[in-house]
Length: 429
Image (tube, rainbow, N blue to C red):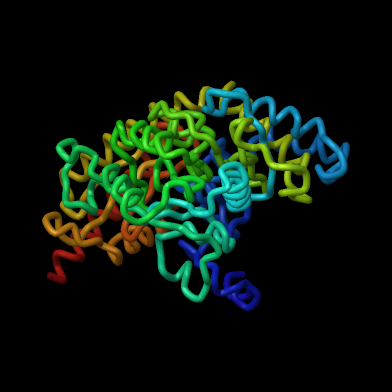
């Protein structure tokens, strides 16, 4: 199956493992050969409530029995309206909201950028090194994670990149908490010396930089960033495509910093993997005129029905609480492993978005790129599917419904893989 697929698939798509899925339910994935795997990446973070949840299947089926699609540019749907009410109730903005639906997280980011530029009349964007916001040319202008993502693709937007608060690898050689937030002062310097603040529409950020390496900013970072934005008059745009709907233990990860963004973007986890994106903005911000932005398939009623079910499942099954409880357990277990294996340089995360950074040397902190990939390979061979982000960060991102029993079984496999890679590296050296 893999050989045949390679005949037809674009070579731009890379695969973490040689995996061909036949079925999936809850936290377990089964391949076409009958092998079962514990899902520690949740289909790249899109299956927050687990695979094939019966409430989602039933909600989608009921909507499909009525109709599958009618463009929002022609008609309104009950499914989209119900979802809008639910999202408005949980979104962290402290004001009335407007919502625009699209087909993906990337499109949600594109819409957010356009809304910010329309509202402020600014034509520049601030974004972060290590960022990933999608693959279309507008969203890609924000990216600064891998050069391969941008090679031969011209930037469509004027974007100035600034260092993300990556405390393990501070761009300014500082150590938290004695750094006095030098990373915020640096932005102020740019706005004084290089970037006219009146030209800036928004600063776009991920509250946890997931693709960049599961990087968690320090406690006061976003409150300081908000004060800076308010002082200079530009918007804060929060990309929660990877961190929303419970992944970090809150409905939206930014809630952990008690900060209210102006624009918030949500992606595929919203509808448990069905194509759906949402751009949520404060009412005062989403003030553009009719026909200035639209999406023919955005807000598909089947996807909206599934998304409404996702919110209901997270609430009724107490998955936010489970994400915090199980995530703290994963952090504790990984920190114990870091004490045993020097190749684990750092452990970080919130909720069930957790990663450990693999290094070649604990002192130099040189990324262990090959070692991280070998840990991944060994986990796959033993029936566990972790994620991979940054240059050498192995992720533990299971569905929010994961049990302690499954976590223990999966983490045992992860430790075996780490132990073997550490021993192999020592024998070579």
